[in-house]
Length: 237
Image (cartoon, rainbow, N blue to C red; front, top):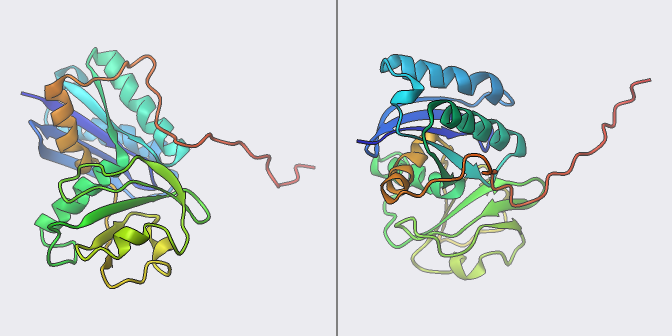
């Protein structure tokens, strides 16, 4: 048996899930901006209490490793590492773009994705990276990566081959709107997919079975880009 707590907070959505052997048991999430530090710990406590568990009853904690919001990733990873340290259980890291694809497939299976068929399509999740830049990665319909994760500045020629592929290109994520006026081909489909810890459930279980654990002491989120602190424009005096 593998009882895994999953935490995702790489965007404005803060989400915690509990899964057993790759099956979702419970989910808590919120779209409140800048409230991850307040909400995530509460969600963990509520879910454990719901099943009369303590952290030591867990077999692992999985966290969305990024790319995504610097602050959100720091909060999620810090919480995950703290639970792992305290309970002496392993840490699992999941690519947040892969997790977003898993949510898309679940929504398709549930009939709420808004497209008739996904077979053969390329999946292009996009996470906002400010201005016209997005964090993205191409996947096939089995959520197998076709490219590396990149910080991509969108232009009229971005992903032009995939946009003209008759199989279709599915674009989603909180950065997808930036490409809507650029990707006008009939084979490009835009759908609404919200990041969620439920997207970590299956890859986390596969990682657990394969023994793919992180070094809890040294693990860091996958920021992709360096975080730059800018001085405040507000005048104090």
